[in-house]
Image (cartoon, rainbow, N blue to C red; front, side, top):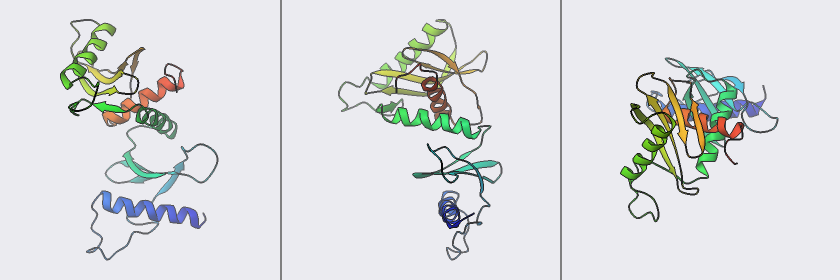
Length: 200
């Protein structure tokens, strides 16, 4: 492997050193290409050919470290590199839609419904897709200000299955229970994009 890969590994390890708060001997031990983690190239999610931008390392569980313009790390949580591509496609699309989550106050945001109104809209999506008596919990809920649409990751209480529900789409069962709700929602949105259920 060339110097470029070594530089990327060093940059990622520097990021991971701070991200995980690893003792670096009082700040005197700098990150290297092989410390604090051995980073194994796992693949590439950026468009086009080039060096790997996804690496895998081991902590208490396997993690991905990504160098994709910005640095990221996630537990693998059962996701393959192809799954990561779908997740990032969904997250990128959502970022263009001016998303507002259920914990963000709409005060001062013209035209944005209140938190109770947004929650009620998501409830309506679930009861329309299933039944009014369906018991569920919202794992992640978004109002897309740009297109005035709602998307949410919900878990049905009886089956414990998780679905993406949203404006103008059929519910999408969502895998990867060990991944965060945000990653799972992004992945499901990415699937919808892949299948042409959402306009890019």
